Length: 255
Image (cartoon, rainbow, N blue to C red; front, side, top):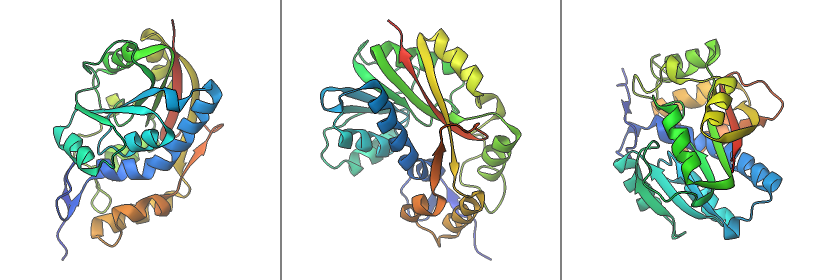
């Protein structure tokens, strides 16, 4: 009988299954697609702008933003993830910072865009994380995020399949909890309290849920590599869809 894989976040050890990195890889295409849309709608000029990624992990999204022309700071609470991001850096001039979302220790009004990834569904203090993001944004700057809705289906996937059920588990137990998953209306209210005006919510999901299950099981067995996951899962944005599990959105910092 094959042994169970070693589940370890922010680890590049041989044989480790890092669900956090798996998630970043499979979300990257929709994150970048959504960012390009927001940048176009707001007429932002990346070549003259500064962007911050909160919850940057191994730096994949930060490198994507740098590729668009932004000067980028990548912040993550995990020193291990920050070290992996630095090691993967390809000379784009990104600044890496090990810091929690709630205490960034960055200057006020110093960014044109803040992307909050792998954070809002994790933190017990969303209001503090949002207030800190708003603080470092300039007035009129864009706050972009993706997160997990609180529905029966999302609980089955995030609390069940991803961190409990044998065969599909890729996260340590306790990574997600029902009370940390937030509905779009709840998050819009939290954005407003932070001085951010919510402008959009867009659902996104795998093109076929069966592909997600097959890819997850294959990654656990070692028959699928991290690099193969994005194409196998095939995340797609549904701008007019009602988010059943995951959704993206953005808001603008009020003056």
